[in-house]
Length: 414
Image (cartoon, rainbow, N blue to C red):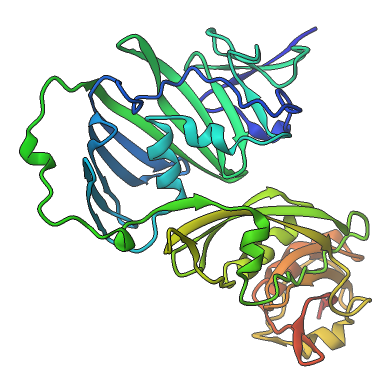
């Protein structure tokens, strides 16, 4: 019997990379390319917002006459831009030197899916009308046999899982002879997604030429341009060893493997964003991403000028490669802790003198990345966990360098 799942806004991508996978042919999408040569002039107004926090908003307005005559305005607390293109002249005014990946991806995809299709690689997934995994009713299937399918309330919903470009296109509506998705969802990771809602899209009947006049063009060196580069090129520009000090996760199984991240650099070569792609152990993910964000590269150059750059970085994962081989004892870890507070046990929690063990994993910065209950009366777990969570830990030092560790903390009932 076929299995269906009711889906409200977007389709859950945590099912896995099934669907169209083992092919080098980019997927075909219903989403129209509004900005193609000869396209219909249009006016577009859209709102980009974080799904978990709709108050974090980006307003986008675009007037497009032709590929060489258009203007766009982006307004948000994080980044604002006024961009006018008229022939070979460009005027660009930016509030900061870095165009966030979310804004870049969604503002491009809502008028053309090309950057998404260009990012598609063998092994990526696609669920589209063309490959039979999505249809007009809103049904989307996660495998070709149709045994695991979902229903979108927005009708036809197409998804592409490309690196740095994991998007859903849905709520398709007519624009002239084509169809354009009015809702796009950008999946950054399992807990972070943004959506772009196209509120207005209409034919631009006439335009004011004065609005496209550029008296003082912006030099190319001051224009923000983003490119995708191969991993080898980016690694060759690294200004430090690209080494991740993996924290010691508590479980002894699944301690090694492969993982990858999608990184975005500003024009100075500083890493600004890190997106997980294939994460071996999620509990170590935050620590790895914090380390990558500290890395610096020589600027990526195109035509002799620095550009924003994106790339995939692959790593071998080993959570036992750094730090002591065995967990620290309670006595040893307390020497590395400050702000030590004792747990408060309610009367009758456990007999006086009872002990409970909390197992913790601390990364190379002293952050607890994981805790787990050990031996002892279960009623002692919550008070112990809350108390240890308030402690401040230092990393262990080996060879003059901070290293992660595991430890056992013992709590006692007075």
